Image 1 (cartoon, one colour):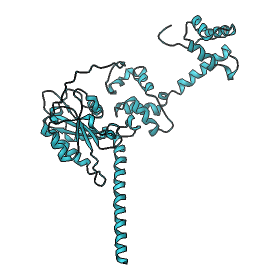
Image 2 (tube, rainbow, N blue to C red):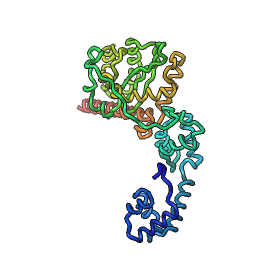
Image 3 (cartoon, rainbow, N blue to C red):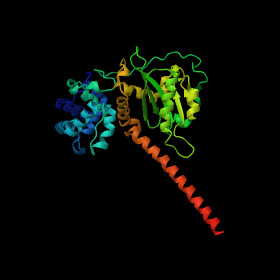
Amino acid sequence: MGKHYKQLTLLEREQIYALKEQGKSSRDIAKVLERNHRTIAREYERNRYAGQEYIPCKAQELSDKRGIEQRTKAPLKNPQVFLYVRKKLRDGHWSPETISGRLPFDISGESITPETIYQYIYGKGKKYKLHRYLTKSHKKRRIKTGRRVHKEPKHSRIPHAVSIDKRPTKANNRAQIGHFETDLMEGKRSTKTALSITVDRKSRYAIISKIKDKSAINKQKVLQITLKTVRSLKRVGKPIVRSITSDNGSENTNHQEVSQELRVPMYFCHPYHSWEKGSVENMIGRVRRYIPKGTNLYQYSTEQIQWLENKLNNTPRKCLNYQTPNEVMEQEANKYKFRRYMKNKEAQTQSLEVNRRGTST
């Protein structure tokens, strides 16, 4: 049998009919035709005309008709879908999965699978070099392989570090917003400028800030400034910023000062276990699409970094059911605002009731 599947011919269908009449099983017929036995069984079930007895010429007609319909109704044959896919690939740098998930929201009644997009990129659309707009920009499709893991040291290099094992269950399960992960993304090795990236685990809402070097004091300042802005979205007595998770980099040495200033605990991953803060690692990978490794970050202005942050926060995510991080964060923040409003209203009502009773007595 060859590597690529080929449709059954009319001659093969006549052989299937003749051998079936002799009482041969699908496996016996498959050996004679050098086909997979599932192909024979599927052929006999799918191409019986109107559920009647299997007839080779009628089966060939049904097969030809089905092939024509598939080719004419293929998603990328629809100009509207094709233009949508191409625009989101080129302009938005969306992944095929994101395009597939978001398409039904933007174009009612239309759908497409990620595999169809991949096949077009690496098939008929190869001449347009659309692979350049994918996350890894590979010229050829690659099979995922395992990765080697470094041996971890016994102890963290950060003094008084609290292990990620003690992080609350709601943070691990992404059950509520306010549990952030943070890390630094470096640029050109010979320069000191870096990006501080902080991501909410539930909403995937990202805060990206440019810092002049990777020192602990600068990392401390940027965390305090950025997370204080998020703390303004709070319900009574409980700030939205609930915890911070980081790695064991030297820039996090001042973690106790950050915890005291923000009044939240800070947890640390096990050494060489960067996947334990997968949200921020994923976000760094997304930033790398626009700022490749080895790029001098000094050349980017604050406005450009803000533009990138807005773009990433307004990109639909599969893990969010194809909503954007901004949409999810806004929904969650509105919940807390509504609860705070209702609690204040109840307090005012109770106060008025007490005053009314006091006046009547």
